[in-house]
Image (tube, rainbow, N blue to C red; front, side, top):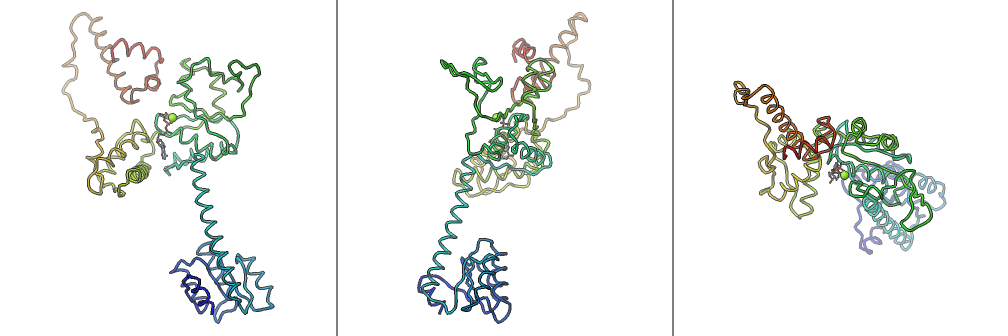
Length: 393
Ligand SMILES: Nc1ncnc2c1ncn2[C@@H]1O[C@H](COP(=O)(O)OP(=O)(O)OP(=O)(O)O)[C@@H](O)[C@H]1O
Ligand SMILES: [Mg+2]
């Protein structure tokens, strides 16, 4: 009778004689709704209810009870049943309950999708990676998010500082408010009145105290910059209340294949290409490469490879990674050095050449970032800039 009533409404119906059969059915099929009597020849409706909730906590279950056993119906609803039907079942009542349960399930699914989309819109980004060095960063981030303190994110260029800053915001109580990235290097110093978090609007007369949390990010090692007097120590102490250091990609190589697959998947989706696989030699090359530009360089490399690849696989040669530096053994490297002239002349010439090469190497390592090269060489920023000009690098 129930089957006829439901099929007449366009539903497909699967029948089970007892609890075991119902459990089997739940495992092999994915029903949108479960309708069960509480009394069964073997097992009972409570068992079916539990199996249904195990399979999918959101699966709606309607139980049927004999007239007068309202206690059982209440017990079932306490265990997660959506509703109950008293027997003998009235087909109109049945149809109504089923339609309502299915509509509610659709709303729940849409709600979950929207919640996901909203989180992404609010900027909750996906952070890929489970290397211990990165999970430590994530847990520090979560702790910082729960507070309203100033956070300082330090890490080389392309390590994900902005991504982590967005995640911090999305996890914090300020998530419904805006995330406003500011590139301090692009703002004239006179406009950056960050001190005491207050400022006056141009032409205004009152002091405005914005309600903000400051998350600062830098690709310099600020402690060293303070030591070499390139960064104000008072500002440093204000910013470094909660410092978080994001390790460079070469110190978490285990995450490289994971990140690579993520970027390939996304790039393929964007250009509407079937998902590409990575060949074994490509994975090896990716893991071996030092990634001076960190995750950003990895991302660019794979986006390029996705466009260039033919076939359904990305090979090492498609990645165009720079070959590792070849070590060539010289018999005597001093053979080729010009030591002519006086002691002073020969020393000066050699010193200059060594300096020039060392600076060039550092700049190559930092992808042309003079600030980071200065940190690496442990010289002042201005001094390095002077030498770069002097040697025409
Ligand atoms: N763990 C990660 N998972 C997924 N994507 C990442 C991850 N880390 C970085 N990225 C991506 O790499 C790119 C560079 O990250 P981001 O812009 O946050 O770097 P940054 O540290 O701010 O660099 P810069 O110092 O040059 O400003 C972004 O596209 C970011 O989404
Ligand atoms: Mg950045």
